[in-house]
Image (cartoon, one colour):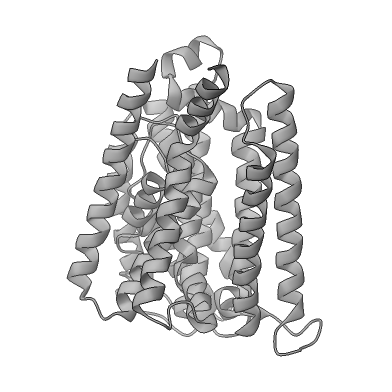
Length: 392
């Protein structure tokens, strides 16, 4: 009976994350069945290139949401930082890295500005960032003088459009890409094994060894298949390398650092966090600074991908990032959410958008479908909480 209860607890605690994986696989299988080009090497590469900036925004947004806040300004910050880069690099002929550094500096300043009002003045993040959405969009128009600037070209263009390939030879595929994905699989397996041993040491319930091995093998097969598809196309995208670094770094920050634990404490129970000595104002300030930083990175990536800057860039990006977090398991009340879940949620949004575009679905219908998916994800979050409370 104890084993059954422990298994039920394991399933309950992991149902939301497991469910999102199952949903992701089902959506991919659906579009693969409806369009034979969906899983082609070229289209998979395009998905990585076209939606990477949403995933970057989702990494920062998950910290905001876990802390019980929201940021509605990130789309405008993407536009503003890209505009600053364009003015410096295209209009004034400065080196590409000057544009990148200036964009990041602007993003950090924006984050500090909004963090100040939220953390030290006490204005709700919803209001501060709603004002920021208008403020920074207006500044974008001013910076660009209401016109678009293009092209960047050169190294700046390669940030989001370049590839690492041919470093280890051919055989019809890029071996370097396969080696990198192989290293990633080994790293994942080692991390999962160490995590399993840690849970066992603390006498926590874990899956059986055959199920654990099956999970590792399944992930390895999917990852290596994806790597092979990229290797068969143009190689390893530069943007995927950047995204992988950000995912690893922020996963470690959220799960292994004191700062990450404090973010979850603030979102889980603000009063208890204050009584425990957590510096809530400091946490709220730095999560917005971090969001500004990642929004500037997304701004650089997006302007590089578009090979220019436009006054209307980044429109609705904040909603895509927020949707990715909630679909990926974040709670509407804070305290719950993982970087990995946000990435899966972002990929679901990307796969749906790409799949419907390949099928020629009108943009209006695409918006309806995305809205329904987000609504169902939040409804599932509420149902899951009620179910967990009933089992206590």
